[in-house]
Length: 409
Length: 135
Image 1: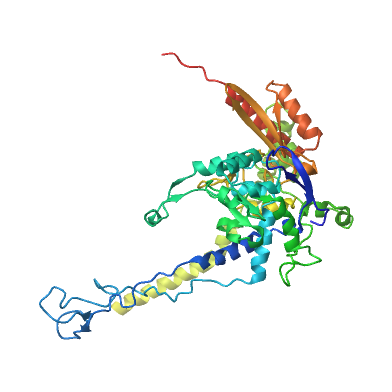
Image 2 (image 1 turned 180 degrees about the horizontal axis):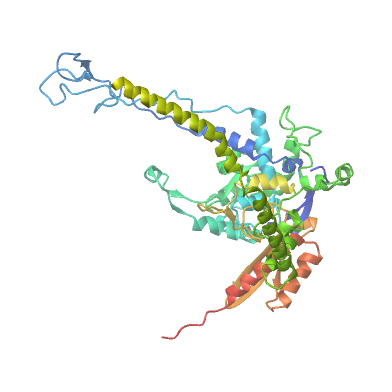
């Protein structure tokens, strides 16, 4: 966002409906949004608190089992030695054997932890902070912020000196967090799975994260309110800012903490004063508003006019649609009409047809008379041509027959 | 406020409002979404211009409510106030006219006007009470 930094109001912690001042938004909160980066860093960072688990190194191998080899009518798997007990001769060692070791035993030297580059971690935190300043993202994460006056929510420093949970709860409610806190209380349920038997019995949603600068009692005041977490500005944890890898946590800043963000992270030009060699992430696209870019005069003025695309309408069948047939075959409707009329007696078309028919028949008769009567017809000439040959053949046959008869005699 | 396209990319797969069903388009329960579909076009979270039409029941009173997004810069960061709700008249002629005025005339998503009118009709029919059959 290259535009001027928006100004954030600071709310009086005692009377949250009034504002005690304003502050320009720190540049951190305008970092580019990178859900992919946050997810990746969170995934790796979350692995760092894991405790090792594994089966005993000797599990399943603490016998002096040996295979009986072939020739004894048993499978070749190693068997427990000795006698006098059920265990003797039973299979051992293999993962398929009862009491044997497991396949690919889990080991303590599994790579439990992951290194994440420091810059990457810092970028992720900056990104997560930026996301917590955008109402749609905080809403999308599931926080109920409809009553909250403004995001980012900055409260005057007095809140850091709260010592009583009751007071803290009151303050939060007045700040508009009532709905959020209630959501947490309502969401408490027994965990599904074995965790419930492993000291992780209950699960509940997360509420607001209160970021402070000086702890004058605020952590202790807030710690028993379900869902509320506290964090010191200097030590911001991505696992708290983007729980589950999804950024947009509802964050409440104290005035001191909000001011300190600028001191810690600085600006893109100055770099981060408190983080050596670190500068806030730069967006790949400073202006990501695609519709504004496309509709801007700079772009529109250089575009060629839009091409007309031929869109095919629904295909019509010319045999069914008379209009289409006329389009494709001009004159066909007229011809059809004429044909129709021609079968109705009394119309001039009918007479025309009859006339033609008559003339045709006359012609035919004339032709037949000429060509189909008399001796010069096709059939007769054809047969004449054959008659000579037929006679010759007949004579030949007679001669042969006579010869045969002669031979027989 | 961040660009709508960017916000949409952040929110389209990862939002508490998304509701999924098998063999059904992905839907959202966010306020300000006219069709309830999880689309950039209809998104109530990501876009700068938002249009939502819903029925609201307070006690016995049923009303039709139009949701739009305030254009004021100062309101963009105030979650409680950024979405502006307007009641829409239930009269047969007055309601659609009011919608046409707000949506069409003020260029607040004029392409959604037709859909909004259709939804308005549906909401009205949902208010009709079926006559109980006495046995």
